[in-house]
Image 1 (cartoon, one colour):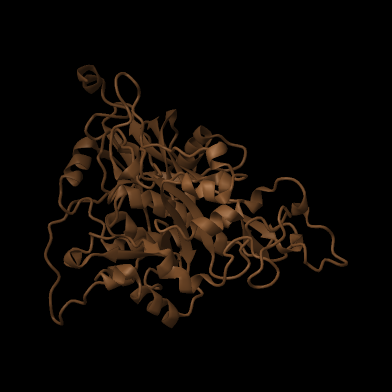
Image 2 (tube, rainbow, N blue to C red):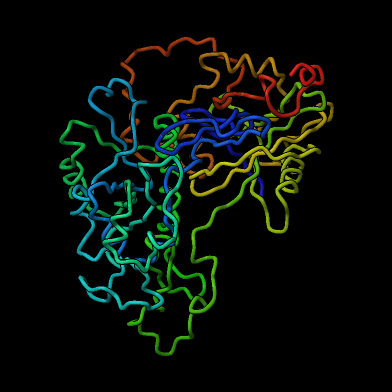
Length: 486
């Protein structure tokens, strides 16, 4: 399946998967190189390197989940129409890029959560479901959707909690909670909450009373506003918000589904012990493991194609992208093919380009809505003709020299993506209207009447901002003379 994606962000506001240098550990927000000595560099791209220990084995433990909700350190990330709630401190209001994900306390969001229990809800409001019954494992049947994202462990740079005796789902809940050191993170989808009620809750939150501005943001604009820690948590949260919102019915029998496993499983309503199933065939999901009951990630290959002499890169342009914007080509992997197969097929189908020497670079979660971008280098001849009549998305394809790419990278406008650019890229990917959804956090003041646009001697083309290791001769296929001098 052919498509066009912009290259990928690697660090705050930096886009371009193919050309990133050594990665940084995101635990505790700290950044330290993961590679040393003669080992190949490890890459942690933007949206990657989650700082959370997901505690997956505790997703079915209702005592743990219903208790950790009330921990003072627990924090909530709020989404509306898949837009994240951001906050900026009063001193940062003059600079809209100084924003972070709003981390609300349980006390802040408590009016929105509904009656307890929050997980493992029974047939009637306020009831716990029967224990050890399939179909109700930490089910949430009422109230806004919640996902348990994991634990940010404050006393370690790496995940500490393991499914051992200290953190076993079978342990006494008080002992289990006492072994938790850090902040539990949940996401909360308030799309269906009454706007007046939601506004009252947000304005009464601790952040708002301390003077912070709370606004919902266009999701792709997050790439230019938050740091690497927030980006990784956002990627997890938004993908899960989308998956829960998008899937409402059982693919096996068509019955409604409900949230289980703290948001990580969708269970057919016919499996509820009180469901009325007289005259119905048993749902297929009653037995076995069914992949559609669990979150999915769609793999996409994205390719930096370099010519045989290592001094040119192939870039393409989607007809719906912002003016002058170019990027690497990409496409979804199809059943029955390897990543390398997909690289060769996509480039042949999109631009009539034959490639060889396909080499893996790194990968990146892409939460729009839930994709894994898998980056590769490939080699092709820049002497062969390029085709733009094969793919309805590809408007142009051109080889660009290293010097041209460096000139763009060094130009103040060469890698700049405005918020409107981000909305146009989102609309191109989703085939939607870039002006259809309000973007509170990124609203721009209107120009004064009669004012003329600022003159600009802009670059000949634009590309996503990135630390271009290929352009600087540090990664990917290079001319023989450069390799000899490394």
